[in-house]
Image (cartoon, rainbow, N blue to C red; front, side):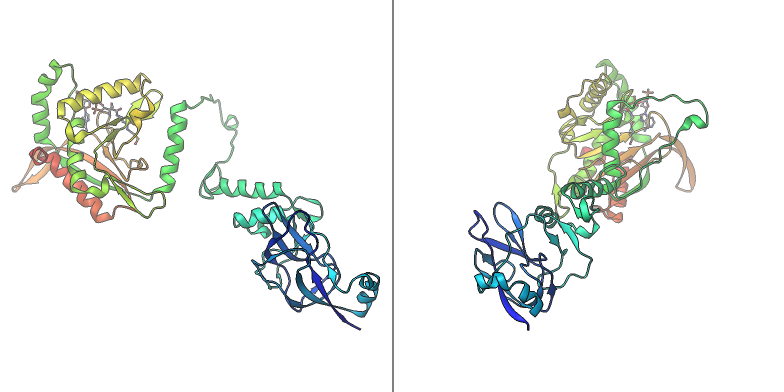
Length: 418
Ligand code: CAO
């Protein structure tokens, strides 16, 4: 004949009360001896309370978050005559059944909500492992178990986390497969050369920026015929001061004038992606090509400096970069970057946004082009511009307005002198 037994919390050792963090059974469930009934968590550890005998759960007397201690009633269980007979000896000693002492690593029925029968196959993991999994919101069914009898060990969880991280942010990035390892000697002679430290570091940043920023690149041509006439007329003056006056100093000033007109470009996205941090200063980064690789020193307060001063500073900082004498502080605090390949050539390129900035300007080589004006083609010096921006911050129309405004500032430098 079936009998109803009460199951109570056993002696928890030094722990007076512990919180129920999980209930593994519900009324009507058939449990075997040693199946986990509930899991408790104290300041010191988490522990499973196993069933002291087999039977059918009649009624749960606790719920998740309850704090329980030795002797508290957990549930009632209906045991068959046979089981009851087996346990008769013990029953004589006490009317109630106290659950067995907490187990550090008993069987685990995985990830069910309280009072829900698990639908997945049973998983085995220690309370510590299960607590870690809960804290990191890890579904243990996805973790490859390597312990005896398929038990999930702490190392299994660590390996799972490592693999997950490498899929999202580490080697390979964004879940992409890593590049295959190829033995190129099978195709011909080769030489292996280590990348410079600068190339390795900039490579990491470029890769991150390329993956994190949804890029759009907008192209435009600026008519710099008059700007160049003026620059050339001032070159002799600059040379007397040992300064090389290139279009770049003018472009920096035109960029600052445009940033003032479009403050969203002089900004950074907050780390949580919910706010735009607008900057009231105008520090411009300039990409400098050095034998060791690309570096981006920052020229501060460009809005407060004249063209000649900027040209001098450009010369100084690019010399410093090429002499490997830049301090980390020389490369910090930029608002917007200019990458000028105009001295080399090319008609356009798509620069990569230099996080945490939201836009970057690529400058290519100016060339004379026929421009249709007043019913005829006339030769004008046209400067190709490539503006890449972070589409999370800048809309396409805003990007186009920015570059058109910039081209206007370069076409008529009086616009930003005012
Ligand atoms: N169109 C036509 N000619 C240009 C020009 C342009 N857009 N920009 C510069 N020039 C001319 C200059 O006037 C100069 O002419 P002269 O020698 O006759 O005086 C010549 O090209 C060389 O200029 P420069 O490159 O020495 O000087 P700069 O001020 O234009 O640039 C610097 C300085 C440091 C930016 C540049 O030397 C450099 O390193 N550029 C490479 C940046 C880079 O690698 N970017 C790619 C990054 S990946 O996104």
